[in-house]
Length: 217
Ligand code: AP5
Ligand code: ZN
Image 1 (cartoon, rainbow, N blue to C red):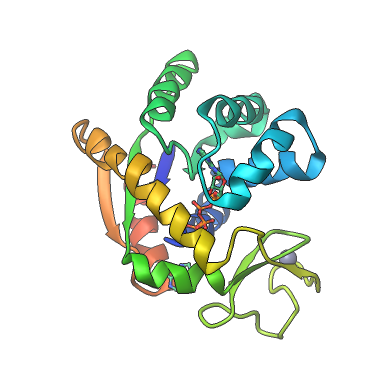
Image 2: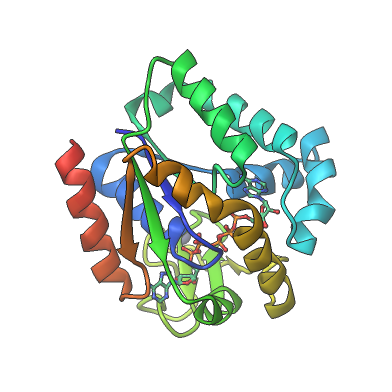
C-alpha cells in the first residue's frame, strides 16, 4: 500500500506516519526529514536547501526530487510507503506519477488532514522531538511519561527545529495554501482522496487513519 498524507504544517503528518509505520510495516518517507538529513550532512542539496527551509519557503522541486529518488532506491521501501510532506506542488505531483509508473506501482490513497490554520501555530511552536529516534512530542498535547525521557527509546536529548517559530509557521502555512492545497482537487478528481478531521485528538486521528489503511490491505 502506498499512501500520501496531505496537510499543512502541524496537521500531524509526521506523528501519524510514524504510527502507521509501526502498525502496518509501511515506510515513512518525509521529504522534510530527508532534507534536514541533507542539511546536517552538508551535502550539495543540503547546502542549497538550508536557508530556504529556515525561511519557511518551499525548496525547489529539483532538489526535493533528487533526495526522494535517492531514498526510493533503498530496498526497504518495497513494503509500501507513506509520503509525508510530498508532493507539495503540481510539479512534484506530476513527477510522482512518473516515479510510480516507473516502479509499476500506484498511490492507493491520498489522505487530506483537515485542520484550522490558527491551531497549527500552537502545535508547531510547542513541538520537540527525540534526538536519538525522532519520536515527536508537544509541550501541551503529547508529553513523554517522564519529562525529558523519550517513551520509545529512553533517549534524554530532545531537540527543536530551526523553522518552528510562529513567524516561520505563518510563511509555511502561506506556502501550503498557495502551492499545496490545490493538490486536494487534483487527487479528488482521480477519486483517490479521503478527508479526515485532523483537529481531533491524536488517538482519534490514528484510529480514523488505521481504519482507512486496513480497508486497503
Ligand atoms: P516538513 O518537515 O515537511 O514540515 P511541515 O510540512 O511544515 O510539517 P510539520 O513537520 O511541521 O508538521 P506535521 O504535519 O508533520 O506535524 P507533526 O506530526 O509534527 O517541511 C519543512 C520544510 O522543508 C518546508 O517548509 C520546506 O522548506 C521543506 N520541504 C519539505 N518537503 C518539501 C517538498 N516536498 N517540497 C518543497 N519543500 C519541502 O505535529 C506537530 C505537533 O503537533 C507535534 O508536536 C505533535 O505532537 C502535535 N500534534 C499532532 N497531531 C496532533 C493532534 N491531533 N492534536 C494535538 N496535537 C497534535
Ligand atoms: Zn527516542
